Amino acid sequence: MTPKLNPADPAETRRGVMYGLLAYGGWGFVTIYFKAVAHIPALEVLAHRALWSFILLIAIVLVLGEARTILRVFRDWRTLLALVATATLVSINWLTFIWSVAHERVIQAALGYFMNPLVNVLLGALFLGERLRRWQVVSLFCALAGILAMTTLVGTVPWVSFILAFSFGLYGLIRKVARIGALGGLTVETLLMLPIAVGYVGWLMATHESHFAAGNGSDTILLVAAGIVTAVPLLWFAGAARRLKYTTVGFIQYIAPSLQFLLGWLLYKEPFGTMKFISFLLIWLGLAIFTWDALRRTRRR
Image 1 (cartoon, helix red, strand yellow):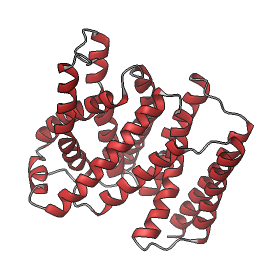
Image 2 (cartoon, rainbow, N blue to C red):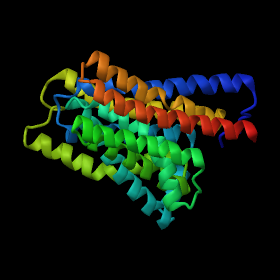
Image 3 (cartoon, one colour):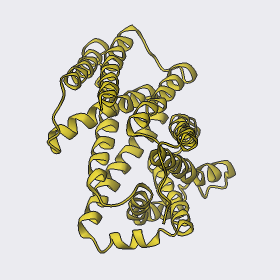
């Protein structure tokens, strides 16, 4: 059994911050990895991500002695049904992100993850009966104004952002009520993806369309590495979540989309004109209000 940690211990807090920085930094810089595999079809990358993630995760589960947690899921049909839904949602999220990086939509992807905390608040109000506070409503209106500005001024509907924000928001909503931890849940999710992933990889090999089996060593290594770039940040995040307050993790989470945004703008030279800046500014204002309100309530408590 995993020992219980004391969040008030300064040493544990420092470790938690380090794990949080590693996790969200990893999720930010993972854009570079998916840019390296941009020449490989997104579905093939997704299949290998599920395949190699499962192999790595099941090894970690066995080492940590968490196998019974996995087996219990298959005797609880409600949890299993929830994980079927979350496996579908995380597959959509992964596929959309892989596609967005390959098709020069990194800034749109970053926008989706900036929107995610606000989407979580909205989904909590709609499905969990959580009451929206005044400043949360203001933050949501700022984000909505930013999206409308992008649609009207820039002439682009940020559908990549919507898919990423809502698929991950719904994923978190369902996982919130599913009775399983982060590691066990992701392991079962990748297990549920496994038959389709293995079948698709096998079909690509049989039709000689596989980049994994094409004889290009760099592609083979990159596809195997998909499991590492998926599982390792999750383990860092688990280490952070166990040691830090929820509000602290909430602040650190902005590192990932910030890094993605900077990579898309500065490294990959995606267009970011004045009108798009105005749209982002409104959404960032909404996030600032949302974060200030959360911090204010935490201090009151």
